[in-house]
Image (cartoon, rainbow, N blue to C red):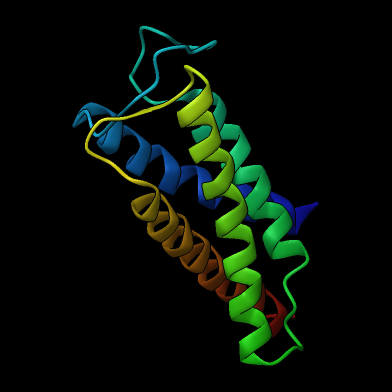
Length: 132
């Protein structure tokens, strides 16, 4: 639970920041939102729950003992999965609209936030393990 919580909270910090910037700059819009419609323009469901939850799973099951090629494939699998679902949601629903955005920007930002979360995760638990 501790490992999942650290990943979840760190990813929330990043998606909160990036999600607000992207939504406030009108690069992406979220026409239909269930929660906090008047608080800000970001999507609470995606930015504060879905992405952080998926990132927790990413870190919990990260193939640490595998080779670098397999690790890169793991990153690609997770970021591609999120991006594909986002593109489907953009094309077939009213949950997200790309204004000045594209799928490859979503892929890159998701990749980067996963990478930064992984670095933080390793630092946090490595530092804690050394102090024991």
